[in-house]
Length: 376
Ligand code: GMT
Image 1: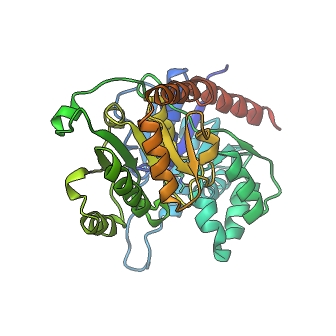
Image 2: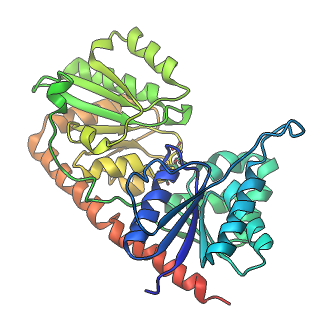
């Protein structure tokens, strides 16, 4: 394919959408495209030098006359400046608001026929879409983009349901780089003093209420009452206090490791036996996919895109939201049946490699870029 100059805008700090945008930029650069990240800080997964990846920082100044710092205007101005100077072919922005709307303004400011691809990740639709003061802006961002993708079929359906845009939305799933996320071993078990007889349950999130981390803790308490087990809680966020109180209340403090925010999650997956993702909103569940690629079967809720990633009874289990009894029962039965467990591990790795391989999904984005650039 012809090599393109692509501008990428996302929220660059920890979060699934920032990870997907950054990993996509890295893989597109490996395929020879020139990538320009236009973001408020250096994307945190951009941890290596690439000769064809550039970073343009959006500076947002606080002026005493403004009540709020003008991020959106600063971003649109920066996108327009970079698009003209670097002669960008297209912009790929993550989130309808504010990023698609900023890209549309930038296109006007640049005076060019700059193509805009917008990817919806969930929070912009499933949370903000309910806010009537924002839904018109979300619809505008979607309809004025040249192409729109969503990370699961569930999110496509929810977007039509909530926002009702007159625009085709294509599902392009999230992906995993199996050069990083692969089945492996690690010495961390010993370092964390986890006994060989203990099973390791892991949960990774930003501890927002929608992640239902208390359900993870309650499910784990039931699991640990029947089999020796440890719980790794990875991440931090608004629910941390509630979660830590619950852990104390349930008398399981010695079985729970609060690891805080971590990078290199593949090393933690290498010592984990089962992941729990029990969210009430989850458009995809990137952490489940990354765990599966490392051979960790997941138990998730019947929410959003989770059942498109976890195949119930094949590579993991799907339970009803809040049904902690069933989560615990399924985890205990799976962990107690070595033959079934091995089959789930193999299926999890296969699903990650076949359905969600970086090779396949990045190719789908390239095809979409080609299609958009051929539109007059
Ligand atoms: O899950 C979060 O709270 C972060 C959020 C984000 O916007 O970065 O993640 C969303 O995008 C990820 C990447 O596409 C998806 O894997 C997550 O499922 C999605 N989160 C929600 O829908 C709550």
